[in-house]
Image (cartoon, rainbow, N blue to C red; front, side, top):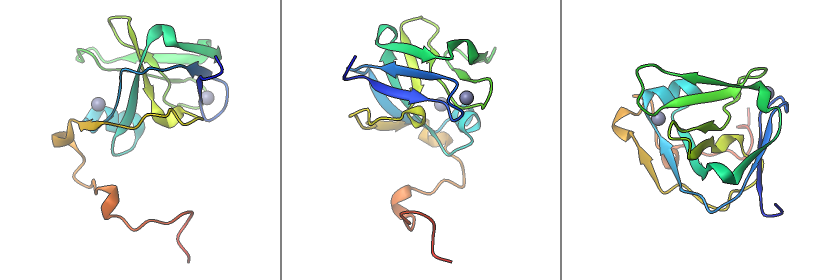
Length: 137
Ligand SMILES: [Zn+2]
Ligand SMILES: [Zn+2]
């Protein structure tokens, strides 16, 4: 799997590799994804289940199912809480939070979903002042 894309949690206990072609890449602004990530949106890549394998720490990946959700789930490293890939309920696709990736997946998000549910404090990144590192004090 030389062309594979690696991902891992922040503590390093969990790592995985995935291969394209992917099924899509999108931002989701729904309130569940905002709470899951603590951010304005999640960036999800959809990967056919047989194109992702765990390198280590699969036993540390905890899954959370929201009883009221039809599709949505989440998974995370039980040690550090980082968002980890989770299997859709039809068992066919892994949903990968792109922030977990260590490599460039070579694809870019195509669109945002649930934009009507975006946080009231959300400001489009192109409207923000950009600093390469931290702003000068
Ligand atoms: Zn971890
Ligand atoms: Zn969402």
